[in-house]
Length: 106
Length: 157
Image 1: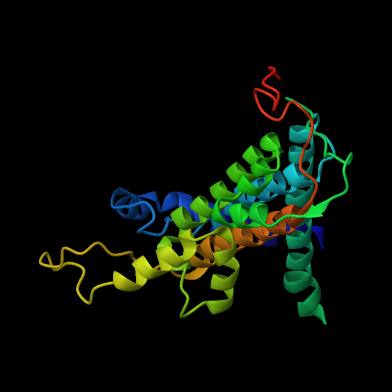
Image 2: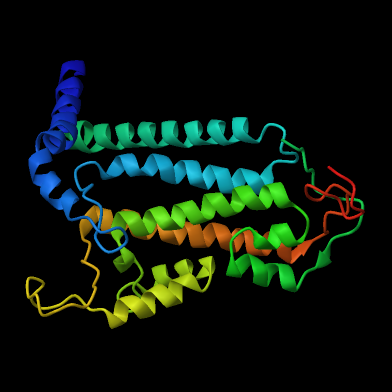
């Protein structure tokens, strides 16, 4: 069971991370012609990493509103960012196991 | 970093100008009430999110016709969203982009996840700014003397 999960996870990582990195030559052609705000970013292979800055900016704005005083502001921001990122990773792993491992046996 | 606690010495009142300022520029509502350090972080956070969304998915993530409900959320960021939508609508993607006679600047369409992530960035920025607008709608101004680098009475902070 554990081996199966590890194999599935490694397949997923290889197909979603290693392949986009390997196809840099194709991406380079698009990057050279990149016009900010007019062309979309060539991040089709690693779009899920874009959730990290999103979470950071959400935490930054939300904590600026919510903290009683600004003394521990940055500590609170990084804590909230970490909590959300960890929750996202755990939820993704749980859904991955549910869809790829549990459901096929049902 | 100054502590800048919320001022509870006076009861909160309904604000008229601050929510409008908060809609025009994120963070300006809190700035006008004297919470300047909070305003800076709110402004940087929300505007960075909005600009990153436009950089990721291009200005095509703002589309009143094809994504009306997303557009409603994006308008909470201020007048920039309707302006971008109007510009994008007037600069359609040409039938033949390679045609050199077509000198008009246009935005390339974005698809799939990149478009979705860009839309999510910009709409979340709008929703967060709505939260800031609602926050300054009923709030007591910061009456402490050290509102900025120099207090209301002219003394240094």
